[in-house]
Structure formats: C-alpha cells, structure tokens
Length: 186
Image (cartoon, rainbow, N blue to C red; front, side):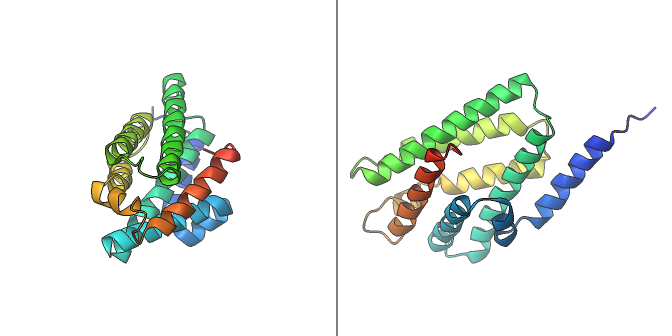
C-alpha cells in the first residue's frame, strides 16, 4: 500500500511554487528591507564583476530559491536532531563569515582572500550537508553555484579593493550585515 501524506504534498507544492516565484521583486514581499538591500547590492556586485546581467540575476535568484526551500523545510519540521545541529553550525559559521567580511572592510590592510574563500567553502559544505537528503541535485547545484560565485578570488579581490569600483557596494553590504547581526537575524 502506498503511503500518502497531504502534509508532505503541501510542502512539496510550497517549495515548487515558491521556487518558481523567486525573483527580486517577489523577494521584497517575503523578506525585510535590510535583507532586500543586501541582496540588491550582491546583485550589483555580480553584475559589475561579471559584466553579465543574466548571470547576476541567476545567482541572486538561486540564493532566494535556496533560502525559501530551507525555510519551508524548517517550518515543516523536516530536519532531524543531527541536521538541526548542522543548521546551528551553519548559522554560527555564517555569522562568523559576516563578522569577518565586516572586519576586513572596516580595518585597512586586513583583507585575506584565502580566509574569505575558506569561510564561504565551509558555509557551502555545511548547507549542503544540511539539505542533501531533502533537496534535488538541481537545488544542491544552486547552492554550489552561489557559494562558488561569491568565493571567486578575482571577485573577492575586486570587491575588497578600497580604490575599486565595488568598494561602495561592499560598504553597503557590510552596513546591511551589521544591521542583521544587531537585529539577531544573522
């Protein structure tokens, strides 16, 4: 006999619908202004660095889809105790990464791209470990795409160059991250 669960079906439908709706304009409806501003700056950084509007949109869209899907899984209690520990480790690592990014921006001559690359790789690996049993290979590839994009050494070097074109964007990103930390959202 086939097991049917309307709760599981509803969760799958939510994930599917929300992932199809993922765009910056829809994201503004579901996330606060500060997070939205950070996403907008990350989009601008990607667009400026790659020179490719479509790629920049794809990265941000993937970021939104990942966040929505993880949120749906969490709200529906799909993570077991071990996965919840991984989620806590991910949250701590993400917080540490944000603090490091802010520190590198605020204190001259402290930027170390290998440190940022390692932090982003560790975040990516923890997130993949958290969701590997719950999301499709395509969604796992989205996670890799986002983290690999922002851990690109050339992008990081360009971003953290105080005389570079991306420095104003980095300042806004770090300001937003600071607010998120103060509000306990990161």
